[in-house]
Length: 420
Ligand code: DOR
Ligand code: ZN
Image 1 (cartoon, rainbow, N blue to C red):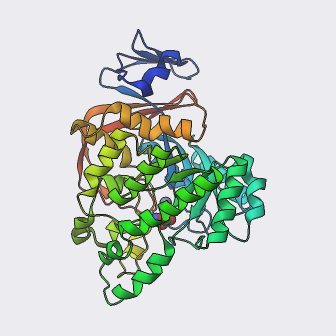
Image 2: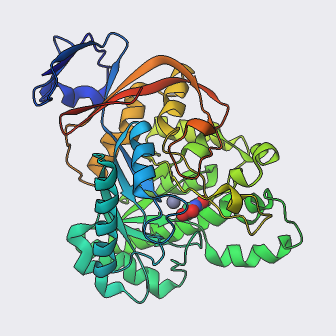
Image 3: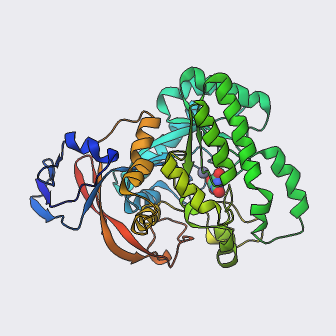
């Protein structure tokens, strides 16, 4: 048996379930892992306990783009980042749009996870595609949700016509499936792109895909949710304009939920100057005034979750001029330290962090608690260094950032994983 003593259990709703947790003794401030093969006691006086983290939005690139990332490297990165569960997106090569492809994808993932013998839990999204609507009902029991790309991004999944969107939202509502939307208005993107064709610097990305481009798509998603009752999960919300639409939809009582991303919380469009294409993603970075609005939206409950949108591309790919440089940044290893560092700076509470990265995701997706735990050292300071990352792409937009608050142990399936 492994016993971890003197742990800190934070205050707040997100930590209430620990009162009935099979490994935690709240009064004793200890964790006991009966099924562990070793026998030892760990002094946890520097450790704070969290529920096992869930990343509801990752792109682990299998099948088809293993050269950017695979589940061997991604699982190491996810666990190192403090995550025990990930929900993976379907924009693969080929896109995951049918039961057959889903099964093939799962087989590869299983093989890769077995190869590294890592206990990462995962769920998969199915991609909405106008030629595969009949697949949605077939895959329903095996997927976490339906991903709809309303605007183009990495890969060829796109649903930019009205009738396809109506079909996807109504089918999902009928099946009680969450629709996760990449909300950018493709028509506006196409209209705006030619105006910037002469410029090959990465910052034009933010000028093409403006906050209004994103807000317009969210408005459309809200009206479909109103029409069909579809549960809509708006991914990577990045701007005040998007927040306004979501706040109004929530106020109206629509079943709309919102995610934000670490790059939108912690970076802004001034970073193009130093990061170039490493600051390019969809939706793009915004001007600095949007960042405090995102933090406020977390406090107000307008933002429900945080997803890393871990979207690795190689440096060689990123080192191209705009628009040849692909959009997307890795994030799963730096997410939690960024959040814990924001706690140190009094921008977030521990309860909010646990809600954003676990509790709210569990309720939204009706995803049962697996009793996984995470132990963090709130006072540990470390500098993000590309050389130490586990992700195959080997870089982070946060390289060189000194952060306070890092994961130390994960407990998955009753087994202790030492992350230090
Ligand atoms: O920047 C992005 N990269 N946004 C997306 O929607 C997709 C992602 C990717 O897969 O590269
Ligand atoms: Zn994404």
